[in-house]
Image (cartoon, rainbow, N blue to C red; front, top):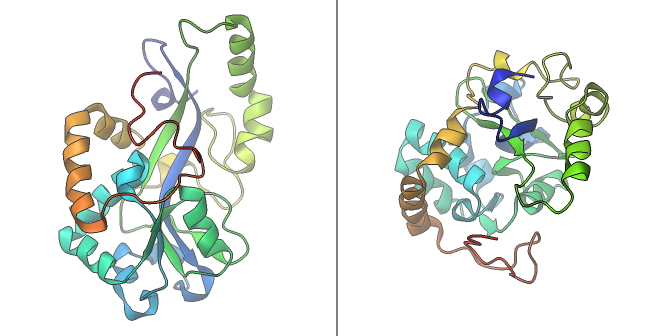
Length: 237
């Protein structure tokens, strides 16, 4: 297993590597999609044709906005809002809106982009990636079952047939899916950066509040929590 995909003290293990970046309609991408830049979303082509997940409602999306703002300044976010995007809760909905052809782009997304879109892994700008973590809770009711599941999920067979069918494995002996290079070969991403961002919760909340001044409070239901059982800040379970 890659060293950056596990806790050195054994508290958690990565189960796959994820990445968030722009998802764009293939018809408006340059010949080399990796040259697409976040500032391209501010051109007239994308006026009224952007769908976006509220960045103040998803920490991973928020982190990608942070990368964009660090590179292009707060004027980038102001320009994006001026494009009159449709904001909604949940990443799947924004990606689906581009994939089905209703919109031309979403600034941050991942997942199934067929049939009309491509997830861009930019060569000139940073994009978010991280090892999605799995762990067995100390007070888990069925520890033996949990251990079996984690052992299966991180096994070579499951990582090759399940995980590597769509994203990067956390195992160094499993090759990436067709069309993807090893994650370490992308110079514009650092899987350790997002966890570092998340480690300072006060700084995250300050940045979230700043972003909210531009995009407003998250409105509408979250498809992952349609009854709003968890609320915006679930707290302890």
